Length: 343
Image 1 (cartoon, helix red, strand yellow):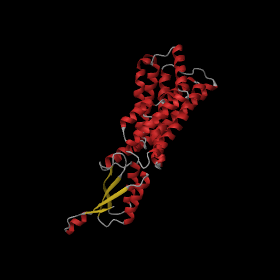
Image 2 (cartoon, rainbow, N blue to C red):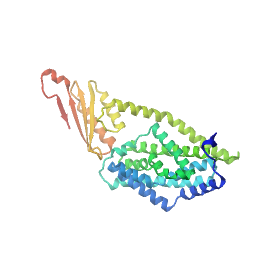
Image 3 (cartoon, rainbow, N blue to C red):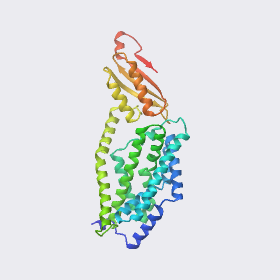
Image 4 (cartoon, one colour):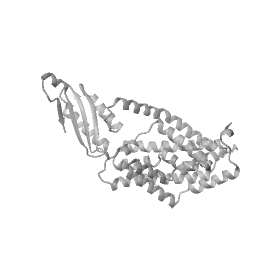
């Protein structure tokens, strides 16, 4: 049934594909140069908050080929190809992480842009996008007539931005954003490898004997599949939580989800005080933050100080925090100005 949709590759085609992946997925100075430039451009684009620059950086990145080679090696049982591709991927990941961090130091005092913060979270959709991209990339690789689609696949899965964002966030002392970006990057790697491996298997590329080598690679694939299945539950919960919070929170609020959650939890500790809305000014970063509270009693100074501390600790820079308190009860006394501002 598979052969009706996916024509098996001939022996010469498999040999040519193996040689192509061996050459293009091995570590070399060309690989390192292109990856370093790609991550640097992506990092600058993330700091500037420029999607166009980020897209351009993704077109230069050579990371997709080692992932396809790993998926191919796992299906074919090729130790040599697996070792070469894994080495290139590991060194490339370390270089990308370092370049992202260095870029943040080159631009001192810059705040984390929304583009960086967006890479600080991962959900089920990210896993599905990366898996589908791996399927598309594997199919394009074995079908030369559609190989022109590979650059589009590289843009769709976005490997370089989360790698650069993790280095930027760590250099900016934003540990949670850094960990989120690393998890997004790792999820993309896992899903792409599995998607590509599935497509190679569908085209008849597989290890047919039952030798110890076959058992070894079968176990590796099984571990990767189980890991992907285990990730579905937390990533699905993260997606539902983001949807729920997106519906619940005020539309004008642009603070990152972890910051909003901690602020909300702190305000909930005070009886009679609630959030009304919040906003962040500045397109390139949180130059200042405004929070609007509603309160039927005087707002404790400790709450004001705690909110200021949370924002500055979470955002990683010294930020001017403005807190405006609306006191509806003051209308009952006939007073005209119900707004009290504390900076």
